[in-house]
Length: 367
Ligand SMILES: *[C@@H]1O[C@H](CO)[C@@H](O)[C@H](O)[C@H]1NC(C)=O
Ligand SMILES: *[C@@H]1O[C@H](CO)[C@@H](O)[C@H](O)[C@H]1NC(C)=O
Ligand SMILES: *[C@@H]1O[C@H](CO)[C@@H](O)[C@H](O)[C@H]1NC(C)=O
Ligand SMILES: *[C@@H]1O[C@H](CO)[C@@H](O)[C@H](O)[C@H]1NC(C)=O
Image 1 (cartoon, protein in one colour):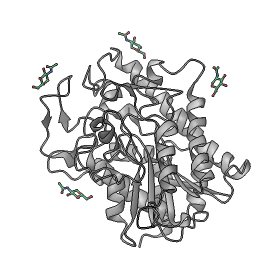
Image 2 (cartoon, rainbow, N blue to C red):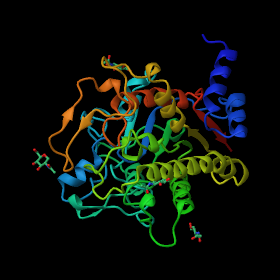
Image 3 (cartoon, protein in one colour):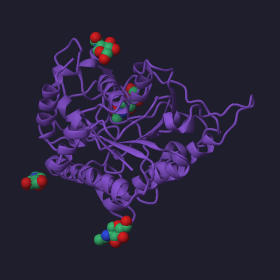
């Protein structure tokens, strides 16, 4: 077992990258103390394509209709990572119990379509969002009793963990980075939305939350600065030409939102006591992905040379003629926008430790 001194040294070195000093101190001093989950029995996920298994696929296959209450989300071996997404790996890596996973994430989703609606032609509507679709879908499922009398959502609240990972689409193209938010809204409206969605789950009984911060999107090929940038592509046909400016703007958005998450979470939980009896871990997935970027050999394991700026799957601007690199585990990114499957395995492994109350990537708060 690593000595505590060694662990603390690692934590300090890593966090020196981005986390504010007071938050870093909190992490190194007491990262386990306020998270006392007894047994991790169920995982409920809200988010976008970084987490979506097959839910957007259902909407597409059913002319925009939502899955019925009590729908079982099948495992998708060809999700946006090119393989499985992190919740499936959390299930695989959680050996203490047969974890139940309820995944409400929808590719393309934002927190609210009242802030940054993004039209999706395949369903002739905005992508289903957390506020308008994902949270209500979970709440309906949480009350759903199957024909045999068992609750659809298994496991008591005290073993249930709610993960929120959002931001990629809210901050991205057709949204904040192109100033396409609804008039009168701004980044703080977006942040309010995230805390309001946690509130709705709390009001429905939820007590254990993991709030992922926003990924380092300015490293994703879609938002990277030269020389690692990409031009017009399958996701973004009206992409602006100045990628230095674009990447800089994305960096500012991401670090600002993440700093607000760092400070607002303890304010909401411990000072305002907005969620009595709840625990919230802020998972610094931004720091973890930055660490993959800076130290790829500690995380990536493909046979080809490791590559944190390129991507696995290269398609033309209409998403055809794709060429897939034969060594996907060498990459941080699967395509212009999405993490690779290996990156999501790394995220899943870290998440399992977050839930154990012992992750150097999490800051734990509780009331
Ligand atoms: C930012 O958004 C909030 C609503 O979330 C609004 O009250 C505020 O006026 C906005 N700020 C500006 C300068 O528009
Ligand atoms: C692109 O934006 C950067 C600042 O973000 C600026 O310094 C540079 O002059 C711009 N390039 C062009 C060609 O406008
Ligand atoms: C890389 O490691 C993961 C486990 O984290 C494993 O599932 C995968 O097969 C490995 N890839 C290669 C190419 O060895
Ligand atoms: C992309 O590839 C597909 C499949 O070959 C093709 O039908 C389509 O025209 C290509 N799009 C462009 C913009 O070249």
